[in-house]
Image 1 (cartoon, rainbow, N blue to C red):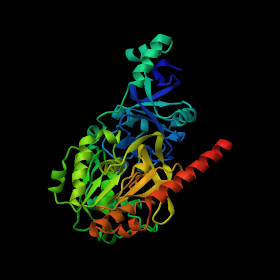
Image 2 (image 1 turned 60 degrees about the horizontal axis):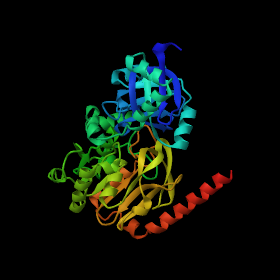
Image 3 (image 1 turned 30 degrees about the vertical axis):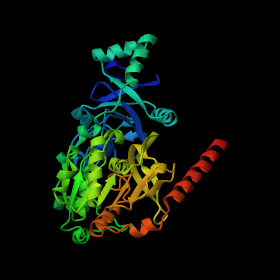
Image 4 (image 1 turned 90 degrees about the vertical axis):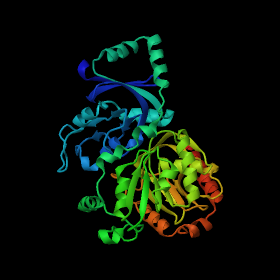
Length: 438
């Protein structure tokens, strides 16, 4: 292997994966994770929730449809590094405006390819998420690390440095990332209609008529509190006829309420939710206002923390476009797109917080509906693009809640939270026992 193309991934446990470099070159440390999406690599690259992470794609070929700016979720790439089995040098798509290598170079993101991503994924799945370092190119820093890996004492110091890495100040670092790709409501619906990304109702049918899709949301204002929001959250709100005002993560509850919103959207975002102490404090004030609230991913976690629940870090997280979640209101299982490393602890839900969705793989909390104020949240991404459209009807549920603050009353009154937790805990226990027997 030529030294100019040499690249390594060094994991915190000492394992080294050698491959080749694409994109930018250099040395970077981040949290190594994997995502199982078979498409949607552009959305992954531009999702602010991946801030501080080295992302591995489990699907073997990435980049075959090139780069398409219209599909970006934000104006920049917030990854620390990007790992694939192989990347397509000659993409083929009528919307493509470039190749993956050029995009990574432009964004100064280090890429690594030609490694065994199956083996790497197995390590992260069995051992759990851990820090890693990508070393790419022939700089003095890179040469020093290559040499250190051949000396046990120097390697130990290097691993200590890798282990010490921690993602901090994540939300404030990415807030406003999507502003560069924001578009007006008319443009959003016109573009969406071209490719059938129009609103989808709970029964799976699509609403192709803009007037019908936007009828119930007309004249209503929603404040999108941006913790690292994906652009498609705003698009989905606009498609429902809502006026959307985006505010940064540092905005206070007083400033939000001064905008006289009919609803408040808490966006997705990166990092440890419990780190955002000030935001959680401001959410508590918003809850008292009785303005309807809808939280997605990090927004879901922050809303739960503001209500007294607890969060925990998952072993390797949920990242991909094939996560099954069960909606306890109707018993139906939906396929969802997810990207998170933390979850709300089921047993920590306080009185007035009703478990609404659960992950059917591991029983973790995927949604909460609140009874003491008009609010609900989900851990997954109903706006996912590219991803399943199954749960995009939740944006219509938000519009209904805005128009009727008692909308979820019947559901919450008829469902016992504790029984649900016990049921799914039992299910997971039986499933785990069967796996051990095998």
